[in-house]
Image 1 (tube, rainbow, N blue to C red):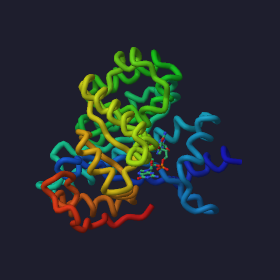
Image 2 (cartoon, rainbow, N blue to C red; image 1 turned 60 degrees about the horizontal axis):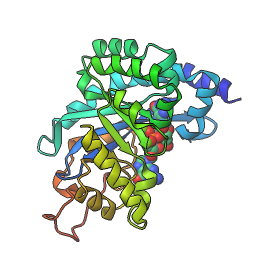
Image 3 (cartoon, rainbow, N blue to C red; image 1 turned 180 degrees about the vertical axis):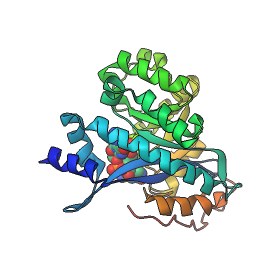
Length: 283
Ligand code: C2E
Ligand code: MG
Ligand code: MG
């Protein structure tokens, strides 16, 4: 059933990319967005990727889904970068958009060729894009993934390891991959204030990122206390409902154009009980 519905969704263009802000914790500046797919199923409404990406991986349609994502990135990113220019003090000039790919995309499709063609069509600078692959997907075929990722990295894209800390990667594999970013899994972020053990795991991942010279992003920041704690621990970037939910393109463009870094800065110089404006967002 899911396969037929997915084929129809591809044929009728029923997908959309939502965008979630990624923030530089020390300054509050908008550093980027993660693009997250949504399916507007005419029967079920908005469907979460957690329920159809695994199905698309099982029936092989994931390659077509990812090709759709790359096409959409080519349309959306120029508008996002332009919106960011309207808030130059609050949006980093190196604003990026990351998108998710799977192990199958790396093993079975010419992802780098697809991205390359999209970059030429859209005029987007490769450095404005980051490819996210989960740690567990990487470990399915580390050698195959390494070759595809190396080509993408050589083309200028950033490479992020997603959900880091849950995928049992060996550090020797990690050191052979051309990665630029580690995303700390939200399970640790969620638990870190209550559980000293999770806090130490976060601290260890941040130290590892520092040692291997990559940027750390904490995922799933839902409250100011976590954001402040992560900033104090030296985590560079943060993402989570606290800063904004994944939102439709129009809302993301409005959020970028009106971003107020001061309101989101984490650290001692900010008033502790300052009210934080929330990004207007829908889940
Ligand atoms: P992910 O790449 O780790 O994306 C982060 C997920 O965490 C998103 O779920 C996001 O909505 C959610 N999230 C962000 N901040 C918070 C927070 O503060 N609290 C909580 N509880 N959740 C938060 P989403 O959009 O449902 O996506 C789920 C997963 O589906 C993604 O995890 C990613 O692995 C996959 N996915 C999403 N879009 C795509 C895509 O275009 N292609 C592929 N292959 N996979 C995708
Ligand atoms: Mg991701
Ligand atoms: Mg993640």
